[in-house]
Amino acid sequence: MNIFQRARAIFSKTYFEQYLESWAQGDDTVNPMASMDQETALRYSAFFGCNRVLAETFASVAIHEYKKLENGDREKTNDTGLYPILHDMPNDETSRYNFQECMMYQINLGGSFVAQRVVERGKITGLVQLQWENYEIYRDKEDRKIKYRLSGGENGSAILNRSQVLHVPGPSVNGLVGMSVLEYAASTILLGATYEQFGQQFYKNGATPSGVFEIPGFLKDESYKRLKEELAKSYSGLMNAGRPMLLENELKYKPLTINPIDAELLSSKKFQIEDICRFFRVQPHLVQHLERSTNNNIEQQSLEFAMYTMLPHFKRVEENINSQLLTQRQRKDGYYFEFNMASLLRGDQKTMSESFAKGLQWGWYSVNEVRRVLNLNSIPGGDTHLQPLNMVPLGTQPQEPPNQEATDTVNRIMDEANKKGTI
Image (cartoon, rainbow, N blue to C red; front, side, top):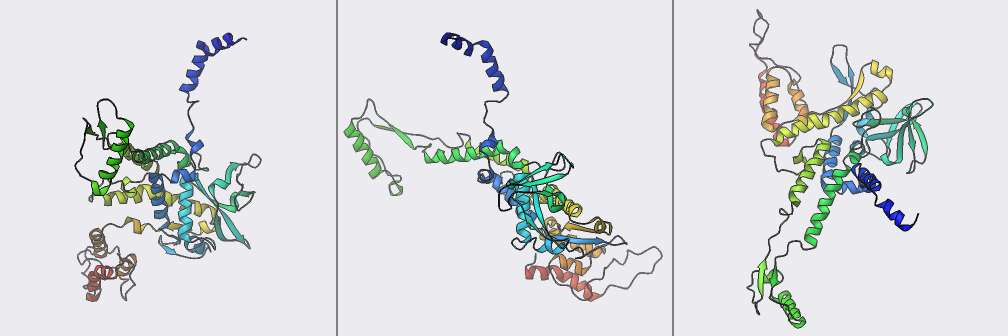
């Protein structure tokens, strides 16, 4: 085939149709994941902010061990041996807070959290978190069980079984391997980071000059040099701001007004922040995007964050801990772990006072139960539950008035908590 035949083949309709087909399928587009990694993504402020608020909120809530009683109540216990690991320190190098913080970061970035169990004499004595980039989750073809292949990092190369790890998958379509927000949001992160880079260059390159000088014809080199030196000397800098300018030889100054809004930079950046928040289901005001937030609705949005964003994360971790770390016998005996979300569900002081007052009035709470929620010490006689005098079974004689000392104590609880700064 000579050069003319090759050219005819290259520019033929068939070749062009193939190119259009490839272009329509996106074969010539750049894969955002090819240039997206953990460090690059976390440099984007909205992505970092959402990860941080989720991780720090999750780490702020401690987990407790409970046992179901036969009468339907429950009690806090430390019978399984796992409480010091999950509530205090999972290992000698990591606190409980940092462990849970790391867990949330890895679920968001890698899709799953995996920690290797430390076992001594058949009992779990610790949990050591693994870096999500250093392991691969797969199903073994022979025994059809989930395995974890470690590669690189400080842990070396090894294959772990399910019984050797604690595996918490994030949102998942198969229930075993979580979906990485970093992977699915790569295009959005890349676009948002590009807007930030554009904004830097926008100002760095002087995209908003104050004005231009116009003159009929052109300036000679000497005149141009003299004008440039005079402008730098007499009209540039803070000290010369607002100084009248003297022009000569029909020279005219024309001010320019170009701002980022005209370039749609600010509106585009705002949309990208909201788009990242959608991936994490984080209210924009939690990453300091307050455009649509007011003092009246932020409290309600914070409660929605606790219920609809954080609660699924807590339940996901609770159930995986209970199913993987507790033995079948322990679960049958009624042992389980649960996060205490009471601190996240608190309202403002007025709402809390009204809620506690109703609980005390109708006997839902005792004085000491309220004091424990407010981080105050118990008082003698404070475990008694009160009830209104008119709320007794039909035909029953009214009870004696409640102890006046206990009643006075109820009225002083909130004042004492305020003085001690516990709320």
